[in-house]
Structures are given as structure tokens and as C-alpha cells.
Length: 121
Image (cartoon, helix red, strand yellow):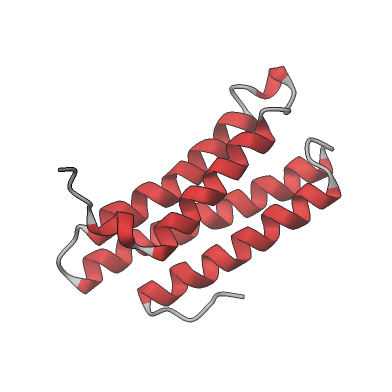
């Protein structure tokens, strides 16, 4: 029997996992010279969202949990920034940018909801 961790049940973690998968798929077409630059950075930021949500879910105190959820939010904003730069460099199309940006906006909204914070503008 495989144990299911609490984070695996979190809708926000599942959403972050799907967004990270989308990021990996979209960055496959980035220029090869970006393998250790933009491609690596945006992928690591996406994975960081999932990792911080998972780690936060394992913390007992609300303040400790929220610290990790805030880091997840920060990583999500980093992804948004990297998407903007990727679009400006024509690494992703306008349509791909809009799709990913929309998913990131949904995700950051949900991260803010679990941390009890108001959305940042």
C-alpha cells in the first residue's frame, strides 16, 4: 500500500504540479544556448513552487507553514517574470504566454488563499 502524503491531496499542489509540467513542455523548444540559463531558471522556479507547498504542508505551526507558502508565492512570481522575459525574447508565443500567465494567476490566487494572505497587486 502506498502512503499518500497530505501535500498530494492539496488542490493547490496538484495545480502547481500541472503548471510545472506545462513549463517543462513549453521550455523544450527554448534555444539550446538557454539550457543553463532561462530554461533551467524557469524550470527550477516551477519545481520550487511544488516543493515549498509540500514542505509547508508538513509543518505543524501556522506561522511556519505560511513561511513556506510565501516562498511558494515568491517562486510563482519568479515564474511570471521569466514568462514575461521569455515572451519578449520570442521564446514563447503570445498565445503560450497568455495560457501560462492565466494558469500562474490562478495558482498565485490559490497559494494566497491557503496562507490566509490577501492577493498582492
